Length: 319
Ligand SMILES: [Zn+2]
Image 1: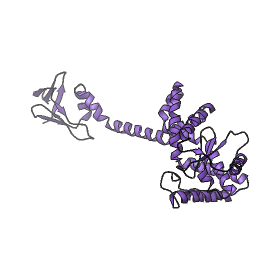
Image 2: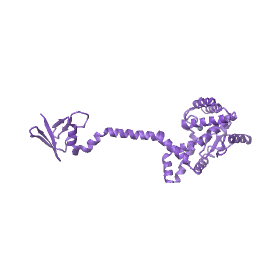
Image 3: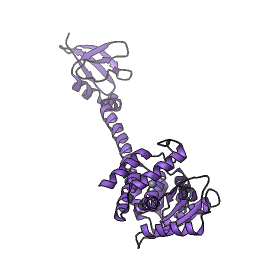
Image 4: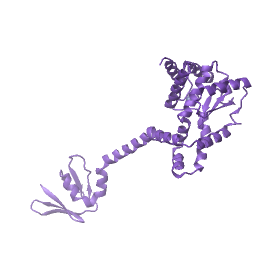
């Protein structure tokens, strides 16, 4: 039997073709099945009666005041999923691109006095704990200092710090203001001038490309943003406090390490030296520290593995 559903503020009624009322029920307690494609909609009355129709738009219009908010949420589930996916994509974008871009912009905008302050604070944490006065002879010191000066561009404010570091072992690392630490343990492994020149060029590249500051800001982007937006100087001590940990971890991203290696290779070629020598030293360091061709993630074993870096450096010789 063809019938029609009518609604007023409080009640629903079903009438037949002649207009006779077949049923009259309060709207409260009436349920309507969800809209799903072209499926028949069911209006379920409190007394188990059911009205079925294929006219979805009419049902939605008729019952708008009845189940409007619920229906709107149900109807917008594709929109909800889309907005969740959108939020996830935005978060992923920020993690992979936005945060590094922000960190890079902050690093380049960091005033020299701030970089110097952070460096001094970090060194005061490390000195006496993991870094100790060098045990190199006066002649050795002079030799490394003069190699270092030869690799440095004249107008750049790099400074070489020689330190005994039995806990750290063979390593060199750059600090934000251009100070570069070379451990006695690495100095002892160096077999040629080209090798140590390569180390210096590599660390100078990390300074030039503000890699350390970028890592500091990536690690603490929120405090960094607060500091730059509010000019709150107390946040600076936060960066200074995480810097030693970052230096000891010594794990740069694959991109940073590759950039520093490529820059070092270019510098070495300019000096008429073979970038492959730096590869030799890296391999020797890795062998000494990890007793294999590549280290586990950590020390030298961040990204990229030594074997990958060595191959690239040796390739740079020909380029
Ligand atoms: Zn490096």
